[in-house]
Length: 291
Image (cartoon, rainbow, N blue to C red):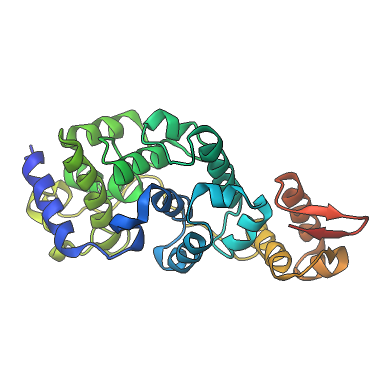
């Protein structure tokens, strides 16, 4: 059985020496900056998030500042990060923080979980990274690290299950400060070294403790892992339509808006209708649209 405590310490020590200098990890980022980063980093690479996060915090340094502006401004500033409903939900969360928590991001896990757009992972991450609380923080990277370290398999199951959660709890240090550092360190190890497609086992600080390496790094034999497609999808079409509206100084006539997606007019109409249903786009007059 792996000596979990010793392995945790080694990974935390590795993190102290190799962590990326990301702005939301700086002491002055605050709980609001960390919450914003967690919303933006969902299914979006760090390199794309960095400039948007910095511009966002300059414009809206507090939840109250964001809540004072219309939700459409949040969608506009979200740019091309993708999944723009996250911008709406972040605006709604900021409004709830202003109205229900005196403008301060709460530290309590249940209070965080009650905010719009905040799920179990985000609540645990903010409570841990912003407030030093002891919580299991399980993103894809951490799940993969633990699947290899203790499970001896290349990848975790497609969906988080109870056995994974219990395993993660067993790895969590008792001391809250150490637990918060472990959460960040195990996540960084998965992002930089124990990656999905090209793990750098030679650079891993705990290769000698890894059950997957000890087993000869066996190939994945579970269900096929399918990457997300984007080109030609409704998601891409919605992004193109939103980008036209973000850049427009006023309302955009329907023919001009639909014409931005030349691949399939029927698809463009369907995507426009879905954007309206989601509250991301508004009809102005009889035939124009805006955010």
